[in-house]
Image 1 (cartoon, one colour):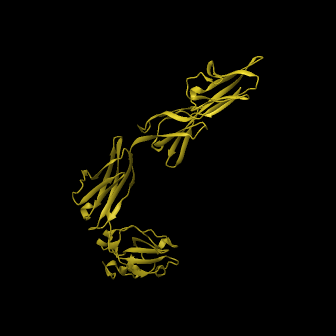
Image 2 (tube, rainbow, N blue to C red; image 1 turned 90 degrees about the horizontal axis):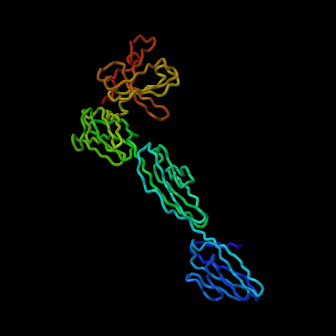
Image 3 (cartoon, rainbow, N blue to C red; image 1 turned 30 degrees about the vertical axis):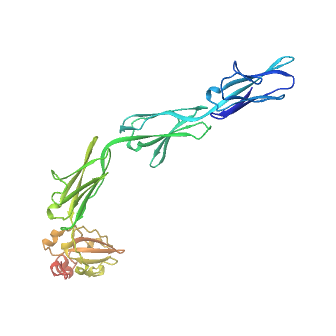
Length: 381
């Protein structure tokens, strides 16, 4: 038995070889006569006779469909005895996804089952693929994809492909949205000077998108009141102070909320000095203090100090460094100076109290080193 393979929608030609001894011929589909000689018995307009000669008897079936598949028989009658030949028609069908899950939204930790049913001849292979933002995700070869304890990283599009090599794959997609409570991914303390503009930012990831609230101590802040503006768009919320005053400094709380929960973060708006000028520096070298190989060091008006300074020298025992803030200047403590360390072109500011110069007998602090008090520094602010 010969096989004739065609794709759905194409035409199939069925041929039968005969000789001049043949007296009668016919084509049958199973037990149904399609043609007997030149006489058409079939009522199907798609079936036509192609040739009826002394050597060949052939028919053609147009626009073949799956129900045309099966055995066909060519019956030949000669003077001596009847003879038959058989042909099996195989109809190939491109893959087609006939049923697939709709887009779905679930909470994190839930179990999810995605369905993708496909038809084709031969039967197609169904493959699931997660199209993650980091590239191709996991692959599963089954009509059903089960995800147990789904995570937020497993949200996104899932692609179902049906393949049987007859034609290009049929591809469909399902979107899976995973809800999860907010978590604040970015909230940094910010400094601003009095009279200047200050902005606090709070960034939260959540599905659905979080709603933001801002508090100072136990008081909720309102947009447009007390010179502040609150703007929330997507995952980012900003609290803007257009004219910072002393009362604005302090601790603020950003609260992010959605239907699955809430979270909060504390953000500090702190004061910064302004107008620092190097004209207020009194330069000195490390050699002046008996420190060989020390970095270049200068002394600065303490009122501009606001950050601690950490310096490492070859002789650390000579330097007893400690954090110093603006109150050091307010207290007029002798020997409290702001050290400005210049290393490899970068500057880091801070304050320190110098120890007594060994053997000088001049007392403690900067005076003992022969360096004027802070109140004597030229160029004071």
